[in-house]
Length: 85
Image 1 (tube, helix red, strand yellow):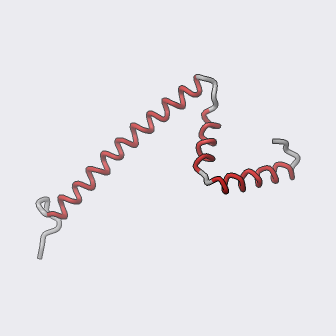
Image 2 (image 1 turned 135 degrees about the vertical axis):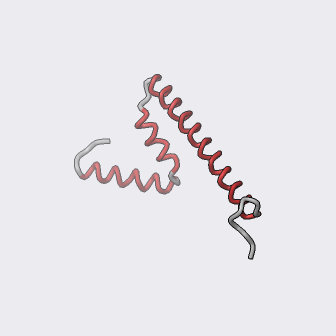
Image 3 (image 1 turned 60 degrees about the vertical axis):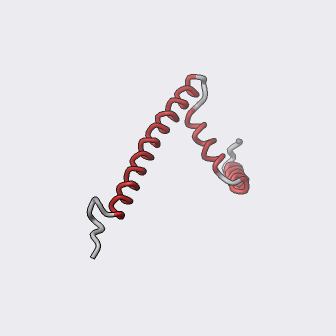
């Protein structure tokens, strides 16, 4: 029977490699998060509202058809309660 739990096994080396890659990606994600926070601070300093920027980012991720459908629903709902957009 082959030992797949030992540090000298091919499976062990592959597992260690995967774990190290994940750790590096987690560090990268943390750095990117810090960069995004800095850009949001800059935007706020220029008078832009970060909350609205986050909404715009979420909208831009959506396919165009979904955007149009959402916009139509928001307008219909707003109109039904007498809210002008």
